[in-house]
Image (cartoon, rainbow, N blue to C red):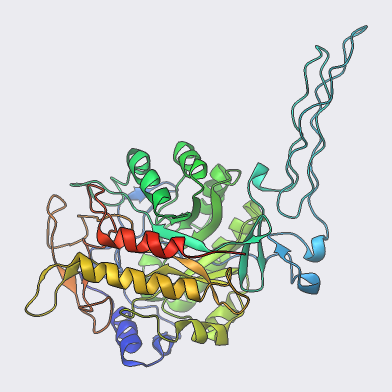
Length: 465
């Protein structure tokens, strides 16, 4: 699959020690490559029409702009998403009433437990009893998340219910053998198999490349303790207004951790060849709409390699930066370099290695090298975790990827496990070649590879305070 020249240049720069962000254009984000792969690495053209009237972008999950959070925390306190600093102007919980007692009757006993307050909100009052003597319903939570976890940002840390949270994540784009993206993307069909396997590997988050709006799937994820980094704007051919409907559809679900807009848009121009400046403006517009619909959760922007300080400052509404980076078997100085550019939270939105070794003289399935890279890179994320230590820089990562996708080699067949790849001069261990259909830590039939065990063992080693 072809990549934009900027994409190749950025990877080459990362491997040669040059500053990858020096490749960032002043006005043009580079052309999108052919044969787009949402959930894949190749930047690509859009696919079929998705909800909201636009075709879905052909690359990975989304960059995001976002409305600013409720201001800087006071005296080191965490800033609730969408609330005022130091808890100012929080939303208050509503009171649920069980109704008035009937004439001559006795009111029922006090209602259930008070509803949980949303981020920055206060808990609702307990409902009163009804006229039949039955207990009233619990009061509704105030201000957000409707009973879900309270999400906040404190310096470089992401807090869930007041506790530091490390994203132990995977990129999840389940397309069956013979299927293509996005037409055959099927969260519901794979959830019964994938989610227990994820839980067994200590995964606590999935990153999507299309909006995940199926509440039955979200229910399964929530029951397993797995959050969702939900992409709601990927393809620039759709109006930004689509995000409002998508966010409103599931913003009350407790499985939602954050919203994601676009995907390495500095390479693909939101898959419609927008200039860097125009893509940035579009994402800021989309982020404002997301914030208006849901002031309680953070918004992430996923960038290809490190954004410049200028880009970060031009998107002040972004709460969290996701970075797609492939630098072999180590992230090198990525964490230090990001810390010098921003004090916001960051995570690796994509990292990892594929299981096919295209090195000269090898050209063979090589799950051992994949496992070695997954182990080394995940360990670096754990060691740099802001959740585990005060000097940490990252809030974790979403490994690319959960399962193989056979549709991604544009020269092959979605019914065959093709070995085509691209070698841009830098990339995954050990061959610096992106063999697009071999990235899963489980194969297309959900058989775990050694990389699954490596991921499980490294994630289990992390202990948050």
